[in-house]
Image 1 (cartoon, rainbow, N blue to C red):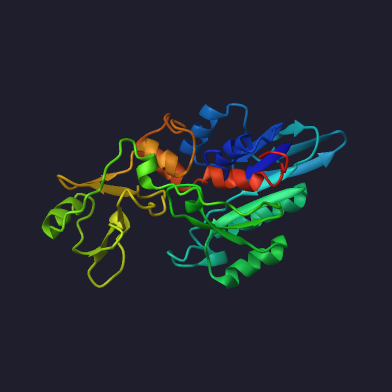
Image 2: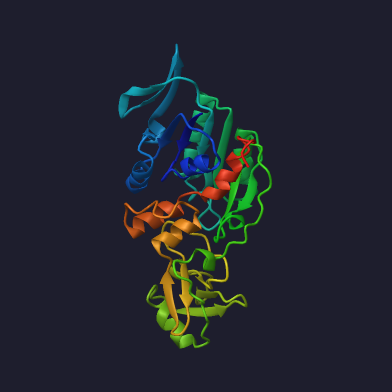
Length: 317
């Protein structure tokens, strides 16, 4: 099959296609982040990078189809048509955690590039992923794509809570819970025995933030710091007990866990962050820790996407 992946990141979808047992003839990727492209190229050297999505045009003619970019007028030619269009357009303008600028945000307007190329390529199947957003915004996307979104939490297949919306015409089955927790993916299990000494906890938290904070203890062992008078601290929003699921891995801040005796907070390792997104161990090894966290935080939970792709390949179990 021929695949066009927009906002491709580090090519999580390419891993998912392989796990779903779907052979790929051509995989075209549109991405601009240099670190993400490096990860992709180091793992999938045959992926054909197209660059900025706004500069890509898809053309048909004769016995060949082509992608033409303003940065490469010569084009990339291939036989056949695009069978699968996939993408997770930048979510900052939609996120309920942000300013909710929706379609006025330049990043969220990139959804219309997905729509444009969907109309140009006319693929048999498509998949669009994005964050939870107000229903009024969901309905706009639904109106253009003609299918309603399905809300799925990646915690069904991973140790991470990560709710996302998926618009697709791929007929996939319900996802079973694999019951994976942080202790199952930690690089060296840490029991996370909780101290009740708030001064000790505060001392540790202040290694990550200089804000004046309070602390809430959850019965499940998680610790939630909060800024006085406000909920949540970006630098240290949740400190997780390893018997639980982690909070969502995002590009700007790594998930944090703790251990006891003595009490210590640490960021997840690069390997653990890979496992939260169910990518192969060592997949991001060619870039720095911060570059890897950014790429992984922007990426997809591979095993979830692979399950969706199984709907394209119903003979694979």
